[in-house]
Every structure is written in structure tokens, then in C-alpha cells.
Image (cartoon, rainbow, N blue to C red; front, side, top):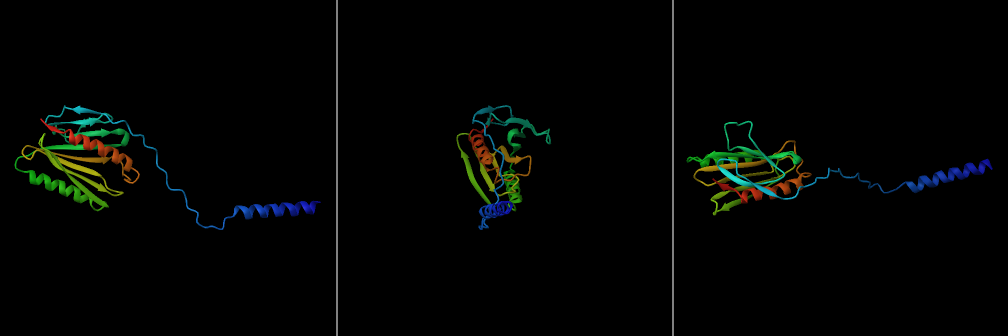
Length: 195
């Protein structure tokens, strides 16, 4: 009896091993998961506290003045703490030096081209409010600023904006947030007015 039980257990063990083995060597590990990102509802309020310009800002964001340039009262950051990012807005007066400012924008974009997979730009033309400029998007995993833009009235004012995150972004995983913020930047630009 003991011999039959041993043979039965050995046969059962061999059967379990045979059934559990898969001769298909195509096992793939699961892809890396990312945290779920809850996006807020879209709503906006007019920011009218800046001396030279105003725009509608997303309600989930708040405005701070640039602590690194305390003398520049028209330099602000649109802080988005839940995304650990901000849109830096810098204002400069135009006194026949618009070409220099445009060259600075070109230089800033060129610095990011090493990490970019692609660059798209689109003209901004709002004749009603005398707002003109360029919106630049950069795709790529390690691009520090996926979106930049400038706005000008061509004679007195120049504003440059850039989206930055407070960490080294993996823009592939951040793409839903980047797309969400892009809509808000579009809204800010479309509601932008000089004072």
C-alpha cells in the first residue's frame, strides 16, 4: 500500500509540473504603471492685478510674483501645485528692441532641441486686442519645457511664457497633464489683453 501511495504521489507531482510548465517562452513583463492623475474641472477667472496686461487664469492655479526678480512687477508665475508645475510669464518693454527679444525666444527654443523629438509652432493673431505672437510645442521625453510662447503688441510690450515642471518630467507619462494645461494656455492667450 505504501508503495502504491508513493507511486501515486510521484505521478501526481509529475502531472502538476507538466501542466504548470508552458513551452511558450514569450513571457513579457507588465509595463510600468503610472499614478492616476485626477484633472480638475475647467473654470477661469480674470487676473487683473498685473500692471501691463490681464488674462483669464484657470481656477485651480494661483498667481505668484517672481521671487528671483523682485523689481519686475509684471513678471509672474501661474502656479499649478497639483501638477508640480508653473507657467513663467515675463514682461519687457519694447523700445525698438523687439528683434532682440525674438532672438532670445529662438535661443531658448534651440537649447531644448537636443532633447526634442519634434517641434510645432503656430502663429497667434488677435487683431481685436492687438495681441500677436507664436506658440511653440516641443515633444520629447526629456524636454524641460514642453510649451513656450510669446505675445507682443509690436510697439510697447513683450511677454514670454514657458511651462516648467518642478521635477525632471517624463513627458510620455505626463502627456495627459500637458494636453490639459495646453488647453488652459490656449485660453489664457485667447483672453490676453494689454492695459
